[in-house]
Picture 1 (cartoon, rainbow, N blue to C red):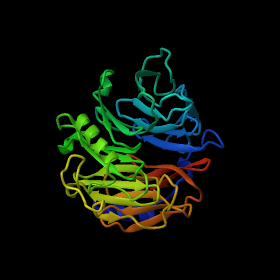
Picture 2: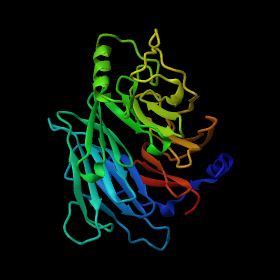
Picture 3: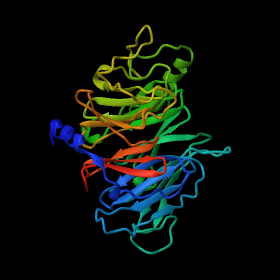
Length: 366
């Protein structure tokens, strides 16, 4: 669908209250939201480690669906959430009280035997659990058979995770990894991006021999020097979100409210001999300026499947939508509350968001 058509549709979006469930628990702070449009399931998670699922229906007469709490047996904050078409549920938890964070992969089966999670989609069974040694787990990214975990001063890549015996590669970054992005293999690349507490984005090429050793050597050199490679990052602000766009672009967000788009063909890498003498970053190709949060924020954003629109929370109890091709702000949605999480609805022309004690859907009437 053309960019102009998406822009026109956004201007016609309105809130559809009949599509919205009431959140499962008052007073919870919701951190992640995931929509499985094929199964018509909506997942939300909280800072207390809780995970809830709601089966929604496009039939306005169907009022019987309820929230179901999914027992993950974890009490620390749920820091990332993914649901795959093959009915894998992938979550990470931060860790607490001296216990490391954890990556947990569960799979839904159609039989009726007991499992750790039960519900309409069938029982769920833990098929993989990974705990990095003495480290928090801040986030994760998932593309096909590859998971990247953001941990303390390390990004950890698990390849062939569906086998239950993944190949694990630990890549030293020298700074805690708050966000990750993985290039889809169909794009002919083998890159993993790690957005760090110190504002830098590390770029790792997994096809390069001895990539882990090279990453460690680079980080040891960084400890003796404050010079930054000329690459991607945010000055003096942690990188909290990243998404790959098209074949050559990366969008990053930072705690200071910046949302920037970079052309990855024109930046350095961890192993490049080129560096900037003054430690500056490359120039972004787009800067999504507007009334977005300007400090101490997660700077939530999402990009639609067609890669034409970017949505982000802002400071005025609104969600703003931008064109990814021009950087123009198209419209603000009056959600009238603090946004906990947001996601474009796969297969639907709209966006889901958790606002205070509500789940809101904005879009064309389903």
